[in-house]
Amino acid sequence: MNPPLINLNGVSKNFRTADGSDRVVLEGVDFTLKEGEIVALLGKSGSGKSTLLRIMAGLLPADKGVTEYRGQQLFGPARGIAMVFQSFALFPWLTVQQNVELGLEAQGIPKTIRAQQAEAAIEMIGLSGFEGALPRELSGGMKQRVGIARAIVMKPDVLLMDEAFSALDVLTAETLRKDMLELWESKKTPMKGMLIVSHNIEEAVMMADRILIFSSDPGRVRVEIKVPLSRERSEDSPKVRALIDEVYTQMTFAPVPITGDQYAQAHQAYRLPEADISQMEGLLELLADDPFNGRADLPKLAEEAGLSDDDLFPVYEALRLLGLVHIEHGDIYLTRLGQQYCQADQAFRKRLFGQQLLTNVPLAARIHHSLMQEKSGEIRKEPFLNLLEEFLSAEEATQMLEVAVEWGRYGEMYEYNYHTGMLKLPEVE
Ligand SMILES: Nc1ncnc2c1ncn2[C@@H]1O[C@H](COP(=O)(O)OP(=O)(O)OP(=O)(O)O)[C@@H](O)[C@H]1O
Ligand SMILES: [Mg+2]
Image 1 (cartoon, protein in one colour):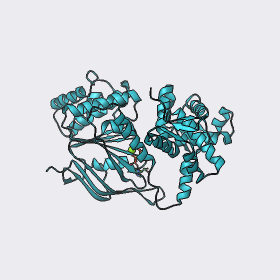
Image 2 (image 1 turned 90 degrees about the horizontal axis):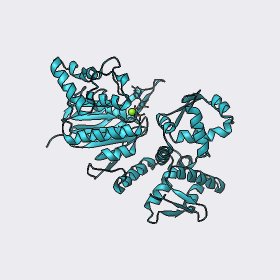
Image 3 (image 1 turned 30 degrees about the vertical axis):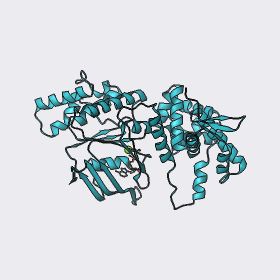
Image 4 (image 1 turned 180 degrees about the vertical axis):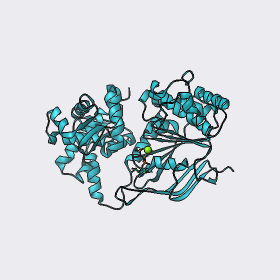
């Protein structure tokens, strides 16, 4: 039997922090990539996914554990492993052709062969005709095609993709993802295994044979979800939707750590800032437009909005919770997702909002999940109120549920009927 393509056993990694102490980023990670599979790795930002990929690629040594490529311990970059980065990482002064040839050049491959191989890779990924272009003349999607051509020209059998589609707009990402799968199916390259790091659950379900959910602090594989579907998958098929839902659930219902005050944690998890959608949208637009263009000093933003901090804090908090803004050193700025949100049309905004809601707001995820489990697709609000009243006063519990209802309706995750007091799944058109 062939050894797996990649095998990690008990891999740990610490980083020295600014104050001189050690931070455990990965601890005891076990991972296998077998021939013929695509595996997706999902996990919160900062959980160590990129670090793990760099270890697999031989770009970074682990502190502990075994890293093997085809049964051989890995001590540095291996020929058969190539990586695609989110940032494209192209040399701006080199043409497409030159960027793609770079790795071959480093291997001492003669010029004419290099040129042929690069051309073939460029063709395979659909960039023929752009060989002479400079990166700045290309769209984001095309830049990433160069990034992919540069990886496949090395004829790797393992391809590691680190959020390779995240910097692209949704449609471009979808197209590129499909083209990648086609390339994989076509067997035009010697690629035998692919690991994709992603923050997009749908992407993971659409592409992978297995999905691993990574936990943070320290990072390790927490859950494995198999995707027992043929490659022909449609975003809207019930099986795909069910799997997406399962992954969401697994990501939000992280087991509560034994240490720490569980009561306080549950309280924290179910408490929502009281911000309504119009306030959130208003603030996002203000932040996205002139003069802030995506980043603002908090007091200046308040001044521009003509609102007090007390009015604004719940709005900041809500946007932060949903991953649309970051707040740091008194500045607020749009995350990449926040930027996408601001540029999107209403339908896409809702979809994005719904997705973020399920990933980041346990109460909303819980409501949605409970409804999915319920045959009738309807549940009375009382069970949720009771749940909330374990941590909150009756009045606060009602308020929290109201917030969760408003957000969930906007994100089209569930509906609420004020007359009957029933929560239900939205009607599918
Ligand atoms: N070279 C380094 N020196 C010190 N700390 C580092 C280094 N590289 C990564 N870290 C830290 O290790 C942690 C994990 O980083 P990593 O980039 O692997 O996470 P990630 O899961 O890929 O996150 P993201 O989803 O944001 O890309 C982070 O806290 C990061 O700050
Ligand atoms: Mg990363």
